[in-house]
Length: 282
Image 1 (cartoon, rainbow, N blue to C red):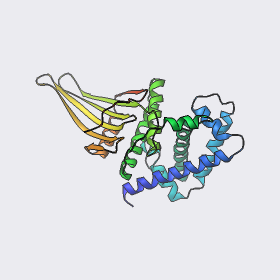
Image 2: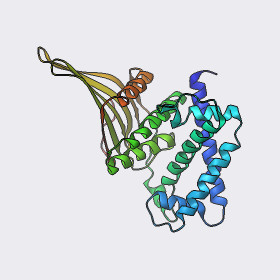
Image 3: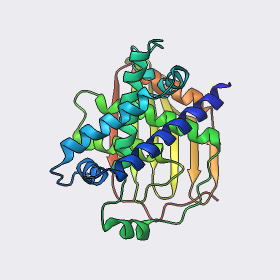
């Protein structure tokens, strides 16, 4: 199986597992899913701890029901693959641990976007008409972006509001092609190399709002003798009217970001109301 086909199969398998777990939780007595979703969204939930325990157990049962080949594929689609010790362990216990964490986080993301009680009608009214067009490979790439961004929330000293914005972006990316109403998040990772004689700076950006999803990389070089030169490396955009504008190699973008995250880097993340009037490409 080719790598892109394997990636698509992995995402499909995670999606099916999340759907089954959510359906199971909704059918259980005690309003487990509503209590869990309310707690994840920051509402008062007196039974959240018990609901959280039930969710973790449901995820673990789903993981343990997987065959070794299924588990190995799922592990390669987990955040464990991107950790410093993320080499394929080839041991079922290690696979189960990594896949359980990933599956639990995906269920958390689903709970974070779930409608609560009377919010369902409001959520429907808030839905916007959009015709984003994604190819299968686009969705696989955006899932990989989500996994890379998820690791940023563990950065020491990261402000809580920045971590929250990153988590919102990760949840929105992992939901695609389903859209997230009201999303407006911008994340930037900065990386600088060199010294006073010569320096290079790079920026990796992820932007999501009602009108577009934009993934980009740009940089600049500074030489005291000739000044500063700016350049664009990759620019990948999907618009709400179905248009797309892709420049550069998406796999290289992922590699550039992965390299930056192993070096000294800065992270900025903001989240706010959607822009209503962002211009679409002509």
